[in-house]
Length: 75
Image (cartoon, rainbow, N blue to C red; front, side, top):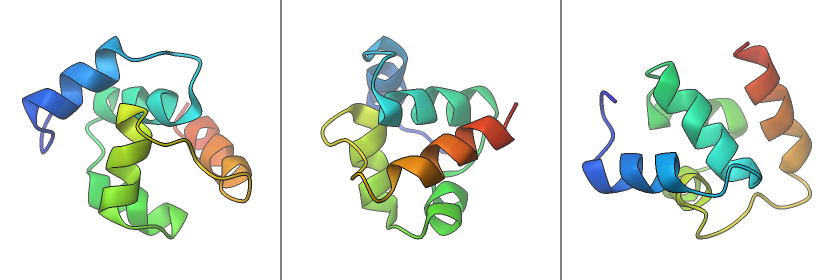
């Protein structure tokens, strides 16, 4: 969980696994991928990534394919 606050990590790990952003967050925590790296790869801000990770917001329809590809690339 390097670089993730306890609140964010707990929210991600306890979040709805069906939500795309939460799935992204879980994948990144499991692999210790920094939020800044994810944000850069997806062309959004760190704050946007945190919103997606915690389920506060879902990725827009325009971002969903890129998020899906990013998650798939981690496997």
